[in-house]
Image: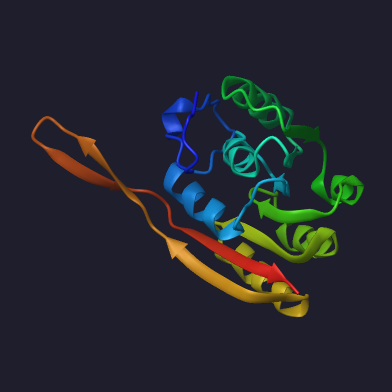
Length: 196
């Protein structure tokens, strides 16, 4: 279905359901680039939601790589599985459960994406530090200022270097009866760092 090596699968190609979030296309492209993925790597997608990051990461690490998608919401797990099937992705394991309990069972990772976590983001970052290989990358997408603050405070205390923080505000064009206008989306702050 997606024949390109570059990330950026259009949002409308993913199956969606109400109340299950998706990392939007342009933000997803930046997050995937910040992870610096290569063939054969092991990746976690914590708080996988619709599975859009999982699908993109799976394409980047190729058939010799492995992605572990975790979500506590059964609807998110079902939707992720549906999107993996839709995009013919077979190198992803989808896990239903609390990430704080499931992460310890996974193999060491080369890259970890952290998305919606229901307020446990800082605790998950702490757990991920011990599961990330030396030189591995962590990429965290946040919307709330409080989450950003807790993640930055946590990262400062852990063994991470090259901490990079960017805020992205995307506006998408929309045709109207009189022309084209831009509609702004919510800003997303992306924190990325390397495990020392």
